[in-house]
Image (cartoon, rainbow, N blue to C red; front, side, top):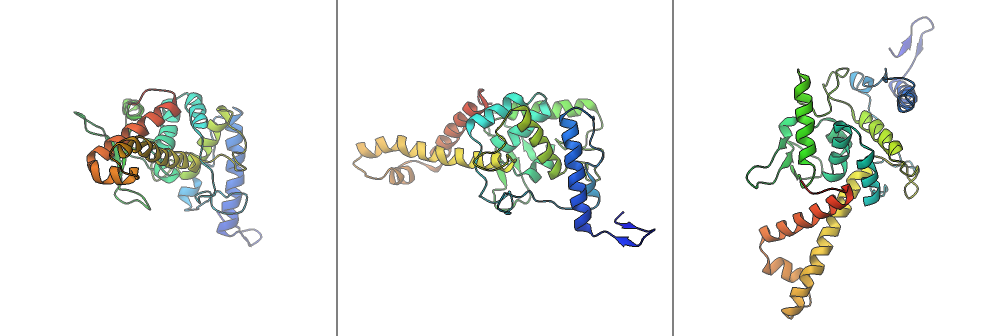
Length: 269
């Protein structure tokens, strides 16, 4: 693959990657339209070690901050459009846990530490770029448990929450996450452009960050009343000096859980 022996025509890896992207996008369209049942070229990027970055209209990577965040209404629409446990797990991992597309693709059962006796569940990472080694699961543990149970009942499960029999890695690729998100976005009737950008999974991660920022602002507003009673002009001073670290974490978690529950139109789990 990569050359035509009869003519001696050589095809470079980048050209082959672009051809693969075009063919895969076409078959993904046919799958969404239910014209075909499988995408025959899905997973080839894993076999040939191709890499792909989605781009914004300005040519920058979709993983840069130029992409806007999904709104709570967008997340709610995606959640309602998710018909299978796998689809619900995809929305949870992107929007409720704030994972990257590549992290979703490689998510493994061994990374999920479910909470017991009041302990907070979390997703563990051995190595993680620009992020904590543990991500708290404030919402969606029930979906993760259902997904694991569903896969285990199928037998011969390799532990990946998004397994692939066609990939040598045993799990789906980042590109497949993008394709599945595209399908969900279409099912959810999301706008074709959100603030000028095509909806991509990274917008779910941005939603998570925006929600987390909003929780901090909400807590400062609530603590502001205490600050006023204590004669302090700064809510941040009261938050940092008069509340324990554990109390601050608890307040942030409770506020974040409420925001996620509102976005997903359900109760925290």
